[in-house]
Image (cartoon, helix red, strand yellow):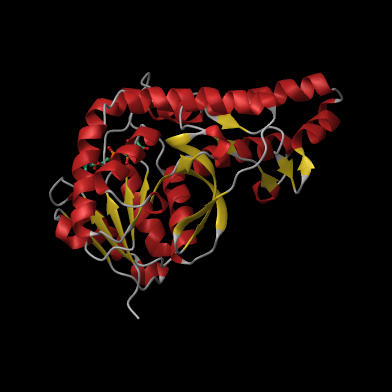
Length: 318
Ligand code: APR
């Protein structure tokens, strides 16, 4: 049986890490596409030459030709500009929607059966555009944001409580922007509410709420925190890891429940827009959107986030 094939569109910072992670995990043969001549060939040659050291048996190649992505099972898109310090993700919409249109055409024409995971920002708008241009079913076109936003939230909680990241469960919903919704009520350490553990640590509910609010705010601004420190470009290790988790769940039919930017059809009161929600990811792509009850405060935050997504998507005049 042929190995699965993973095409990566965009061979920049995230694309390079994606290629290496896919190879290390032997998810399948990797093709890295970029418009810059020689660069994807150079990066993948470098990665492939580590195969004897790391012991992975997959091929990793670079290309400037869309025909080479033919037969890809999964395509991960990072093509587009990253933000600079002081920019919001939304500031990228003009330039990145042009790039996304050409990328989506390339995928539509050369890998018509692929599952597509978008990372390019502004995420919610870029996924919407990609689905429109490819015409692929929405179960096959999705965005990576929630896995990373949730991972950041989980990391902050683990560091605060001095427990393993493996035992922290927490999730964000909504758009991938300043309005994202880290869910406080469901954040737990092996099922024990984080707020209760914070209250034990600090001795008062008031202080626990204060510390939690600070972690929520840090989560919402976490991408910008990295952008500011880097001085040039945006986060690339963690977005790559997050997209690989999604690709792996699809390719290995793991049926993981991950927050995914998915097209909603009435769930959470949203119709016809891409928003971050928990989904079951398996060999059919988005196999199920998991809806659950939000309280009034959470629903209001979700509605606010959806409004921001609608405004952003509306500005593309699709
Ligand atoms: N087709 C394919 N690749 C393209 C195109 C195009 N039309 N236009 C630009 N690219 C490539 C660039 O040549 C570059 O190699 O996209 C790559 C982007 O890489 P980086 O600039 O290093 O950006 P990166 O940090 O990888 O982020 C990519 O993901 O998280 C988002 O906001 C981020 O939108 C940005 C994207």
